[in-house]
Each structure stands twice: as structure tokens, then as C-alpha cells.
Image (cartoon, rainbow, N blue to C red; front, side):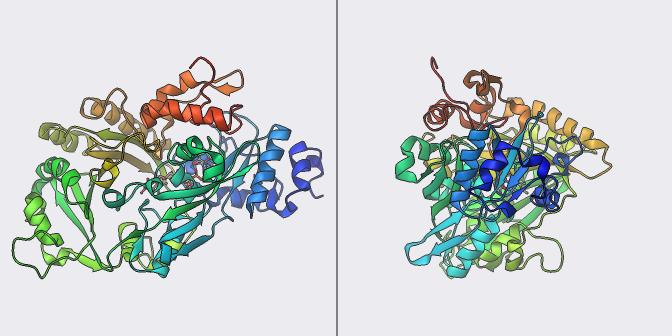
Length: 514
Ligand code: FDA
């Protein structure tokens, strides 16, 4: 072969009998670095100091995944699974500490098979959300799927951690709509919902990627959407009363009719209210009814509704709303086809973390947030996603995702910087200090966080006797999963007791005595 120095490696040797050699890349192959880089979102994890993989395996079918796992176990080579590469800490393709590992890159496993008559679809993990949405939109203007906003997010990681977007109040999480899945476990077995068993099927729907095996594909229930939806994006500055409108939004947004979703993006001194309504803008209905968007806004959220008029609302199909809420750059940035674009840029460094709010934050606290934190030179943004309705009507034990009844909204803190930005020191400082400031206003015991907004500042696994420690994992695990953490660890014990699949925040096996 062209890589004689590696031919004695037991992992490669094992793979050579079961996977075509062009699907296994070593650092000396010319496509290794371009492929590694392909789905990295955060250049922070593409630095000279980044701990990189020894190999990248790019399966084109499930049996390749099985072989990679079997060879990995046999040869003592760990595997990090990558679908869309959007992990906020890059754990799908880099390690925090030096260690040998291979990437199993699923970007070639990306078919979407929509069955419109039964309103279901099978989607492979390596597909991106934009590809799933596009295929659904092609099949029917009256079907949609409730998942995240960014079209390049991978189905594999996103579904593994829950997944939510503009339809969350009507239809809940992506995983609330998963009805079957194909999993390759640590023994290399190919399992479905029935053969993996109910505990494991429960765990893979929100318990986090990497922990339970490799999910190759998912069967989902598609959801009905009206042929026309209405969107708006209304900005209110501090001088126009943003503090009052945001304060009021906290009570109103989680209690609105389920067809109306209004999130807030707060940046500098402006709050932008971004909304998806599953209906039309005006209704040809008697005065005083609340069935169309403008009347609902005036009935239920006067503080914003009275600032609005018809020109701010746009009616479109659900699929057209996808690029509306996540526009790309360039002249074709808002066409529906743009959501199929798989290339991502490596220009923006970012740090994120999250909180949950169960009790509305007082007006005076919002005043200091605007006057102090958002006014700082290195300030980032806050994204507030309201819960209530469908996402909150599911019991907190139904899936691993526990942030349900009682949650008013999720906060995501985001701060970004560019090359030459001092390595992000100021942006990290802003996020960490602001996070400390927010403690009295957000959920506590535990202070909750959303798994898909992964943050290693919340804690990391400690490996004891070659297995991640259940006890040590509680520090981050209970923030993401509350008391579902223990049940996840029990499922891990059942499917991967040796902890073959692991990373810095994977579910540890429960182990004896716990
Ligand atoms: P990636 O491939 O990096 O995987 C993430 C984790 O899952 C890793 O630990 C990986 O090993 C594991 N994994 C991946 N594929 C797997 C598989 N097939 N089987 C088992 N484990 C697997 N979230 C949200 O809920 N709503 C939103 O609107 C957004 N928006 C958004 C925008 C942008 C720009 C980014 C960068 C991120 C988001 N997210 C989000 C967060 C997103 O849901 C989260 O990062 C997902 O884990 C990304 O999934 P990928 O497959 O892209 O990640």
C-alpha cells in the first residue's frame, strides 16, 4: 500500500478485509485534512495544538460501521462518531487530552426517504437538517418536522441530544417524533427499536451522542403544517422599551396558543422578536377573534402587538420559513435550495453555554442585563426560546430531556470572535462572568443546561479503572439530564458496560453499588 508505515497497525489491518481501502484515510492521504476540516464549525478546534484523529473512516453503509466498531474493539482503537460536526466543543473530531482515536465520519450516509402518505421518513445520521427539511418540502407543502434552525446541523448529533427549533411549542423536540432507529452497538450488532430494547431506545432519544453506539438512521413522524405560515422579525430597542417588552414576553410567550412561537434574540441594546405562526396574518373572521396572527398579538401580547402592523408579517410555505430564520450569505442566501449547501466556513470562533428559566426574571434584573452586560464592548448575544405547550406537556421521564413542565424558556449565551481577536479571552470572560451573574435568576439544584449546547465548563468525565466514573459524571450529567442521568447510566451499563464509546461528556456505565 501507499502507507507502509501503517500497514502493521492492527486497526488498519482488520479494516482492510471488510472496508474498501479508499474509505479509510490516514494523515498521509491527500484528502485526510480536507475531510477532517470539512464539517468543523469552530476554528478553535482546528489549531496546531488540537488533538487530532489517527484515522478517518467514511462508511457508505451500515456494515462498514459494524466493521469499524468490531475492528476498533479488537485493536483497542477508540472511535469518535461525527455526523454534522456541529458539536460546540468539537468532541466528534478532537479530544481534550492526547489519546489515539479514529473518526467515524458519517457524511456519506445521508439519504432521506420520505413517505408522504404515512407522514413518516427514514433519515440517515449523516444528512443535515436542511436536507431533511428540503426532502419533506418536496414531498408535501403540508408536512414539516420540528428540529433546529441551522440547515447544516447534522441529524446524528442533533437527534442524539434532543433537537428543537421554531416548531417546539406545537410538536416538541425532534426526538419526541422519533419512532424507530438503527443502532450499531459496541459489539458491532445492528439493532432496531425492538432488538435494542426499551431502555436503550429511550436513551438514544436525547441522552447524548457517542454514549450508546452509532445511530445509523432514524425513522421520524412528520408533522402537519398549514400550506401558509406567517413569520415576522420585529426589533425593539432599549429606547423603544425593550426592557418592558422582554419582561412581559417571559410570561406571555410560554402561555400563547401552541401555533404561535416567538423567540427573542437580544444583542447590544436591541431585542429582536422572531416568530413563526402556523396560520395566516389577518383572518376574514369577525372582529375580536384570535385566530390569525395580528389579532392574537393584539389580544395576547399588546406590548409587542401594538407596535406591529401588517407590513411586518410575511406569509410563506413552511419550507420557505427555514431560510428566512437562518439566512445564508450571498445572493441566493434565502432561496430554499440554499439549505442544501453543506459547506461551512471556518471564520468564526465561538463560545456558548445555556440556562433554563423557571421563574420570570424581574424587570430590574433585565435593566442591569441591558445596561451592564449587553453594553460591554465584548458582549455576546442571548437567544431566548420559549417553552410551554407541546414541549412541556410531555413528562420529564418520557425521554432523557428533562426540561419540560415548569420551564418558561431556554437561554443560550453566544459570544463570537475572529482571527486576531486575542484568542477569545475577552469573549470567554464575558460569558463566564455573565453566567455567574445570572445564577440567582435561573434554575437551580441543579442549574439546568441543554445537552446540545455542550459546554465543557460544566464538567468532564473522570476515568477510573478504564471506565468513566458515574459519580464524577454527576457534576455535568445532572445539569443536562436531572434525575434521568441515573437511568441513562443504567442503559449504558446494559449496552456498553466496558465504556468503549466515550468522550469527555459521555454517559458513564452505572456500575455496581450505584
Ligand atoms: P457532531 O457530528 O459534532 O456530533 C455531536 C455529538 O454527537 C458528538 O459527541 C458525536 O460523537 C455524537 N454523534 C454524532 N453523530 C452520532 C451518531 N450517528 N450516533 C451516535 N453519536 C453521534 N441545537 C438545537 O437544538 N437547535 C438549534 O436550532 C441549533 N442550532 C445550531 C446552530 C449552529 C450553527 C450550531 C453549531 C449548533 C446548533 N445546535 C442547535 C446544536 C446542535 O444541535 C448540536 O451541536 C448537535 O449535537 C450537532 O449535531 P452534529 O451531528 O452536527 O454534530
